[in-house]
Length: 193
Image (cartoon, rainbow, N blue to C red; front, side, top):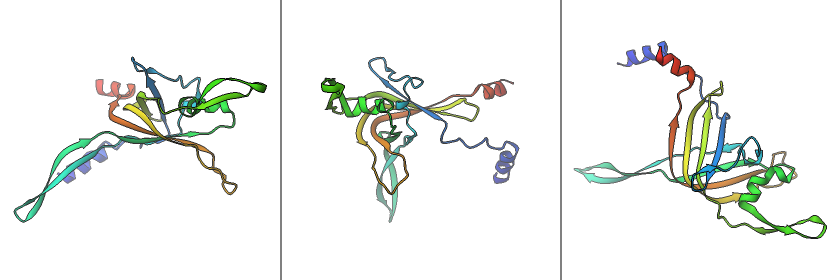
């Protein structure tokens, strides 16, 4: 059996490993879960890093004739993810984070400076979709996070001793997630032949 498996692997070598940097993230909100941001127009909504979902299986262990036996009692699909955004020099390029999570514009006063008030965490995304692509720009997987609630925002740290870029970190709680697989056109043609 092991020999047959090894033989099959060498006859059909695996494809190239999936690159971790070819992905898009889209935010959906509202009754019809419409796309909140057009990423072609608003680059401030493009995270440079996101943690993919996970699940946790819960077990219980019972004594059984002098030994122990474990049983599955449930699987938890909810969890936390973190999105990381670059902080840009121009304020307009940080609009997604600022307008959705940090402050609200309340008017204009002396010398054209703006008046702001702190924004409470009332922004909830119906879903966040993370799409992964292969090196020929074909979508392979989509991870869909359901009912996403912002729980934490970190605005980075400053240091004269560092050359690191300033990053915004956004913590998100999600209730559930699922994965969609998309068969690339090239593989569809191979399977049809």
